[in-house]
Amino acid sequence: MSRIEKFSFRKSNNKDLELFVKRDDLIHNYISGNKIRKLNQNIFSFYKNKCKKLVTFGGAFSNHLLATAALCNELSIDCVGIVRGEELNENSNGILKKCSSLGMQLNFVSRSSFSEQKKMSGLLVKDGIPTWFVPEGGANLEGIEGCKEIVSENEEIFDYYVVAQGTTTTSIGIALALPPSAKIIVVPVLKGFNSKSEMKSVLNNVDLWNVIKDKIIVLDDFHFGGYAKSTNELREFISEINQINEMQIEEVYTGKALYALKNYLENNFVKNKKVLFIHTGGIFTDKN
Image (cartoon, rainbow, N blue to C red; front, side, top):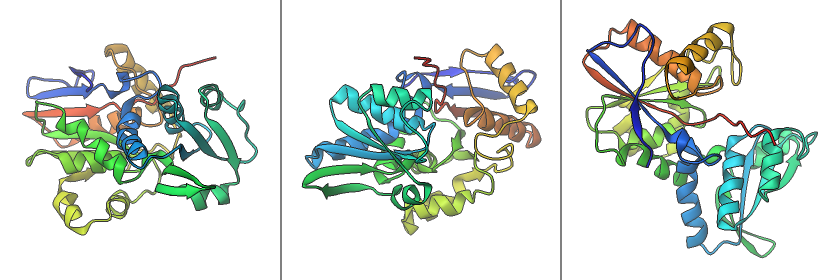
């Protein structure tokens, strides 16, 4: 469980609007944010199926790879990370170095090979070894189930739950666990991303989709050029937020989501509501 605390936008808070942040970024140094949520049920299934190895997928700067490496290290699980980019190696950046130092075996593959494998999920007996596969970003039904806890573990009920969106796994889990009157605001960080279509595809359950589809508000104009892209305007906003609040946000996920939220609240004159922003982590500061 992570704590909930108040935060503020400069010149935007008033008595008619309560802003809160759920500090999932504080759960663990490396297994923080939505990463631990998506891995919990996968690890449960790993043990349930008596697996001996865990394999997952990620890019060069994947916090999911790092979280998986750290969790498997703590649990003494043999793990493999399939990394997009055959030109890379374990010393290419700080995240890959840390994954390697935590005991993750890194296999670097071409982009085409990675694309063919990245959605592998569940139990597969490989070379006689029962192996549990976790798709890129933890985007499977186990990941969705784990993300429900972001909502269900809280006693307090909010009107809006807000989250940055990548694979849609976290946002689906939150949407499935929402109180009846609540809505979820999702902010895709990918340019040209069809959020609802992807959520429907990942969930792969028409009945459940019909239950949640009208609870979803998509703010898809705040990618700032695309994944990991930024602008001076966004960087200035992030700097201001980091100066006036205890939490720290970054440019890839949380900064874009908070910027979108501020815009939505102001342009829609939202009042007398309680808003919960889900801090999904994303800041990696290990320089070793």
